[in-house]
Length: 145
Image (tube, rainbow, N blue to C red; front, side, top):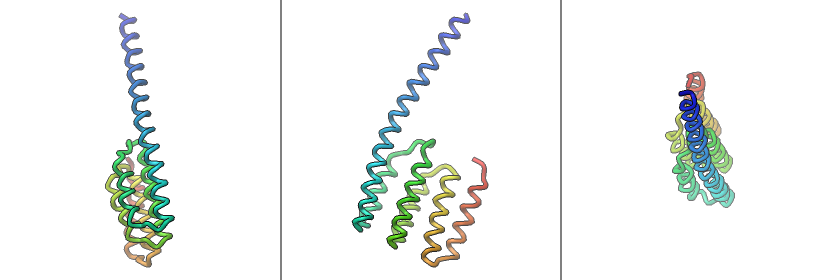
């Protein structure tokens, strides 16, 4: 009987590892595509092709980041919106944030993106709106997952 349980446990372990490898392989493909898309977006900003930024970011959003890697999507949203802010492309930066925000599940990631939105609003001189987003960010950070 013990041998049967041990064999069953070993079988589950093998299936788990195989499932993990499949998941890692799927993630690796998503990661590589996202990395390439990031370079495309960065070049669009560098070349001042701002009308192409949002369509290219939507390709990143369509990749369906696994929840455990969601922070990478959050960071991408922050990086791109920050680059746009420095180019004074505030409207596009807000669109990148707003469209990306709805994809995030983690309060920590949402808080980080809301904080970036607040910084952009502050840079625009829209302090009252910025204050509201800073408050939302703090509220989300204090909520336990």
